[in-house]
Length: 371
Length: 257
Image (cartoon, rainbow over all chains, first blue to last red; front, side, top):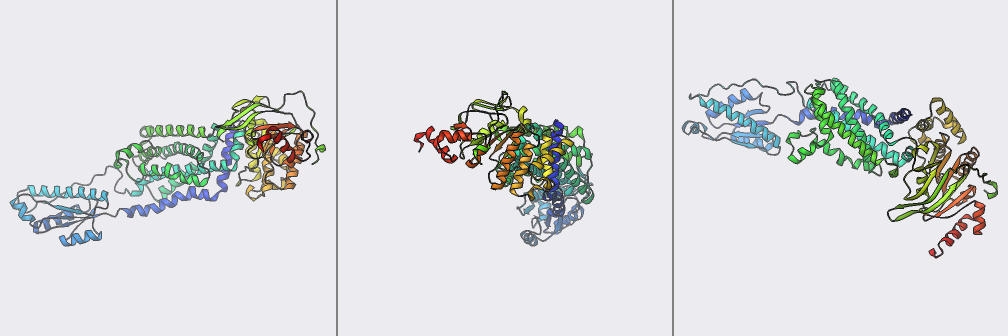
């Protein structure tokens, strides 16, 4: 009997979906469209910043030569040599992100005082790049100090150890890093939105009262919606995943099965959040007004746009309260680090807890007196 | 719509399908229902008549188990409400047609039939029967969004009847539909009464009142009178229901004017 009611509800939701071409397009083509857009944007978004070296005399020119020829390919930013005057001009025009200026009497200072102070000038508009430049500059200065340790008048040969990769690899692209986050986000956001709108429509059309006066229980209503929406959430995840794997050629190291387990639990939470939210909206437009409240914070804090560790302390802690954060941990662990259940189970547990909490909240909004 | 055309069904010894006893329902300081008591007999059409805001919908919601009386008792089909166990014996319809517009007539009916526990062959049979009753058999595969307002209301009634309920609760079912269809609806109700279905119907169309077996006049949460249409005409001394209503309102609260 319960099974019959659940399948009735799930079947109805499936029928409604299949009739609604706009929603189907949103669900399946939307993510692909955005992913396709993001790939070139991401590969262009961080053109290697350029650091200019502005030598002043023969010694500093030699250093600059050595540094640019040996380090240019490995420090992650481009190095070039300019005159001090050029440096200021290029910094102004935005062609370079920073310029390392050698003092005009560099060689003399090194020889007589055994010390010299170099000046780094940067375009301060992008703090991330400034940090990067500072890091690279420290590296350059370190290399030069090493060279100056040898008491010869000519600088020693500069050498550099081969680069080591901690995560990813030489073929690692920004899309690879983002794919886990995007798969999680699309699942969560679109399923939340569609459930909330579907439930809101049940209320405004009056079919909700019909459901509530029928033998259907509240838990069955929530479960039926879950089953109906899970079908589409998983189909969506499959389409996105196939697209990501074969069209965008993103690298996935882990087991795709675990990926689906994470998405199922995440979707359960999204459906319940949608049901809960719909109780506070009088029409479909007001559902849209909840997006800044329920979705945007998760978009900002869950690690998709900014690494969680770089967030200010308060936001950092807030990020650890949000379900999408844990979904991202798990998805990233699977896709980039190639881990399985042994690593992701705590994340799954948190997601499950969230899903249950939201189910409870959803059930409260479905009390018969409130309908 | 002469009152003589309506025969009150013979009262039987069985427990009346609906008993409302001294029901009070408050929302904050508002007394939506104030000491309301009445009974509805099996197989009759019982009208709840009153202006907007008189408490009709609140009363209907209590009969459906959507909420609990602040004090007093509501018994429906032998159970004190709210009780989910009687849900399967109640059919419900309201002025909003409440259909899934992207689905076909058949899909809408099949969905609700299955919610009430009907299976394969039963579902098909009841869809045929109910659509035949409301004269919509030829539109079974039409998407609801292609149907006129009147047709949608007929589908809505078919849904309310799909599981052969013993009690039909109708909240202003004929609001916004044309006179011809309204007439047809009252013919369906009479036919259902003959099959033993008890109907409770709320309306603010006083001209529909004459087609009920008995009427409850509701005003500002209080029951002014419960009687047959003929009885109400006689005790008020007015032939017109609108005037009769005013006579009772005046008697109940003479200073209100």
